[in-house]
Image (cartoon, rainbow, N blue to C red):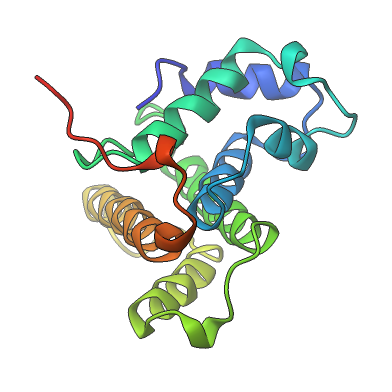
Length: 186
């Protein structure tokens, strides 16, 4: 999705004195883009940075993550990915990051003026409820490492697909031409 690595993203957030960690900041961005076609880089910067930073002064890594996320959500080739620590990181750390990502996503939905829950499909409501439960995710110590890794990968994929489904449903009426799904030429 983005040429920016998780570590580069975290460093850019730290250098800009961002309030949330990387997963939560990326989740916030994805959630807000799902409900608002007019959500711009500056809107995201206002959400995640303690001081107003002019868009032109935003670190390149933040700009790149914004642009890549915006494009990936609008792509029909399923190029969207959660910006999480890599597989070399401890499973506990990756699991905590996934919980923070979902927390940020739900925050982004709220800050982007999610429609009344009664106006969205039962599937969309169920996905949002599942994401809420994932914010409390942990590693099952009674399972072996391989089982936990497989479960983690499955939950990450569930979240990735859920985000794409929510994007399609929630942004349909507010779609910005820049976000219209476009087939990728290979």
